Image (tube, rainbow, N blue to C red):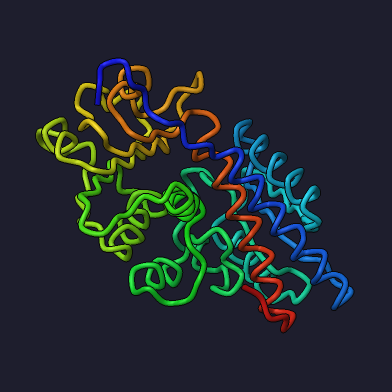
Length: 288
């Protein structure tokens, strides 16, 4: 690539808009056929300002797509047992089709135990062990929303992953780990890196595809990006800064996601699409 060339931006906002339009059309169809609108239950423990904002945004997007949302706000003092009770109740409620537990829930909550109280067929956020296993084994199930959004972006930009070296930086249970599994399923060769990785820059230099999902501002330097690589920045740090040093990466990558406007909108779009799919399954409507 010539020094003057810059990467093409991967427009997550535009693609997310199209996915949500499809989901809205499907939701309208479901309502028409069954008299029931798809319903997403959002559960929030405490009043963390960022979480409150996220939930409000997700509910607003639901409303626009014709998805009902039921919000359950629990006090910060809620115990793990009480949270599990709430989630079990929603799992058993036929009027609720998808369940989103907004995390982090607070240090006193056993988050894994809480996630496991969500019935797999309502796990539209892709956070249960069942969903992770389905992603890993290539079985039907719901994907974690951010990795699912990343895969849809790669597909939309015709990125052929077969035999490519994909480096995932970050190993969280609902971002890094499942992203690697979904890339593996598309025949990429996957390397997982994290905060303890030795010689991270050297590994990045070998990557045809970089997925940055570690939550450390500008950890990945542009000069370490292989010319012509595809860069997916799933980091979101204060001040709209990603995990990749965008300005320098822009001069080397072939495709790159902006922050904001890249991965973020895709995450919510996948959540809405999966909620509608869950409703279709539960109400016995054929879809896809």
